Image (cartoon, rainbow, N blue to C red; front, side, top):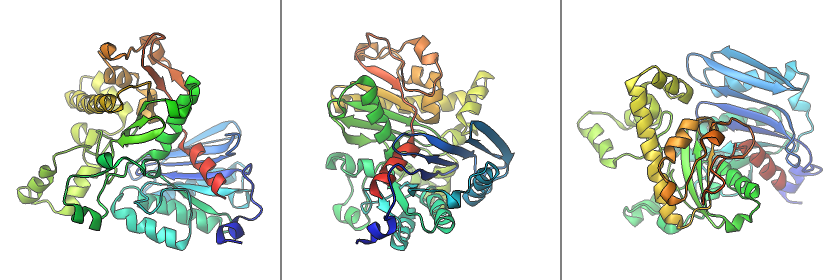
Length: 407
């Protein structure tokens, strides 16, 4: 038997999977049955590393919340396990098929779900230089789960995998070829698990074959990305070599002139680490308005805060640039889907992002757009040539399915 077969002997795809999704400032966790999608328990810790964090846990129809400092992801995982225990679930003794982990950057090495071994952990750690806000957080979840559940296989599902086969024209930066090859410099793309799930769900919602649909998917959360999917294949995406490129995000700048980095070094005297911290942690909405939580940003806008309004305008401007570019690149757009925290909940972002595009076949129904729901829904008019959807993402279910399929 192979090593994988020996580890996974006797496991079944109908057993639940514990999914650990550690982001830059959040931790989602879920115990879910991959075949049915039934959730045993789930939770989310938010604003990790800030002065006041929160964690919400739902199990047996009961939701509990706690406001407390969570200085790091290790503290968040520890609190989540306390919730499980208090609700009568011994995660360590659960009949799990696998533990599935979201890992942001797989480089060119990982482009399929991968059984986690010491060598895989070492490579994920090496790739942390490409995703310094994420891979280290992902590794915390991996190490904690392996310590808790040493006999259950841990599987890594990589955010970059869905974009592994981007066309060369979309994946290549116009720099010296030898330098790019020597240092693995190319566009990788991220949020791939979400883009894959949402695009497949959108096609299913429309009752169409996945390979027949041209789509734009807008994953708008604290991290934000856009993708162009033509006939079932990703042909472009906004994030690049790292999750820093592309749309304006909560704390990340998105697209900037590379010359600005040289200017900050030469004129402002900022070193590499200081520039890294500036662009990753003190830019985006937080840099422009002092606030990266979109809910608080909109509250400030309503109260007349000019910085908040300016930050929102920059956010929408960049979003529309990418939508327009992908419409041209695809040639024909069948569906545009909004997803993730902002995309699913901020009706103003959807309306403003697609405003005055009726001549391009995009007609939003204001009443439909105002509806809040956890189900996929149409927000365009019935006669809109381009269908616009809100599709709640479910990265955890996608990770569970891929993990179960592997083991």
